[in-house]
Image 1 (cartoon, rainbow, N blue to C red):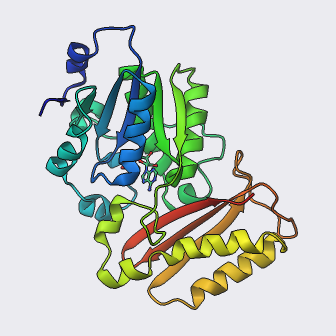
Image 2: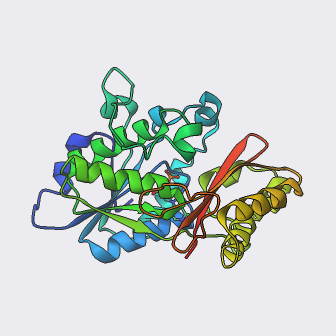
Image 3: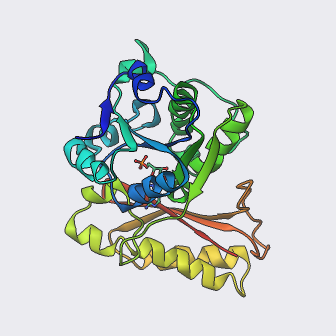
Length: 281
Ligand code: AMP
C-alpha cells in the first residue's frame, strides 16, 4: 500500500511530525461499508491528513458471542481505504497497545446518558467506548474526530466526554448512510441470514411510521402504534422504540407531542441486534 499502516501508537510521529497540519480521525471497528467511507470522505475534505483506526474494542462488548462473531475483514478494509490516496493512514493497534496488561474500561461520569437505551441493555458498553475514544483522542490529538449518527447515543456521549476532559478535538457528527432498501448500513448486517436481511429494512419503516404519527399523535399513541407494527412482523423482535429530546436524550412523557425529537429503535433478528434512529422534527 502507498498508505501508512501501523500497529504501535509510537510509530505515529513518523508520519505526522508536522504539527501545523490538521488531522481528522475516524475510529472504526473495521468491516468497512459505505457508512464508514462517508466519514472518511468528510474527514479528508476537512483536514490535511486522515487517520482511520480499526480496532474491535473488547471492553465495549457486553456479550462474548457478539465479540467473537464480530466480522474481521482487514485486507478488504485496507483495499477500500487505500483508494483514497496518500493523505490517509491506518492504525490497527493490538489490545495491549491500547490497554497494557489489564483489559478493562475506565469509569466516567457520563451524566446518565449511558444509563438509558443502549447503555441500559448493554451494561458497561459506553464506558468501554469512552475509554478507547479517550485513548485515541489523547494519543493523536486530532483536530477533528468523526462519528456517525447511526450510533446517535454514542455521538452525544463522546461530545460530552470530549468537553468534560477539556480535549481540543472537535467532534463531528455525520448522517446515517442507508442501503437502497433503507436499512442503515452496519458491519453486523453481514451476519444476517438472507431472510433476515430481507426483512431488516422494516426497522427503518417503523421509524418512518413514528415520524408520520408524530404529526398528529401524542408520544403514547406513537409508541403503541410502532410496537403494534413490529408485533405483526415475523423474524424481527422490537427491543425498544423510544423518542427523546435530541440533545439531552430525556424521554418524552406519554401525553407530550413531539415537535423536536429523535426516535430510536433497537431490534433483534435471531442473534443479531440492530439499532437505528431518526430525526423527528
Ligand atoms: P463501527 O465500526 O460500527 O464502530 O462504526 C464506526 C463509525 O462509523 C461510528 O462512528 C459509527 O457511528 C459510524 N457508522 C457506522 N455505520 C454508519 C452508517 N450507516 N452511517 C453513518 N455512520 C456510520
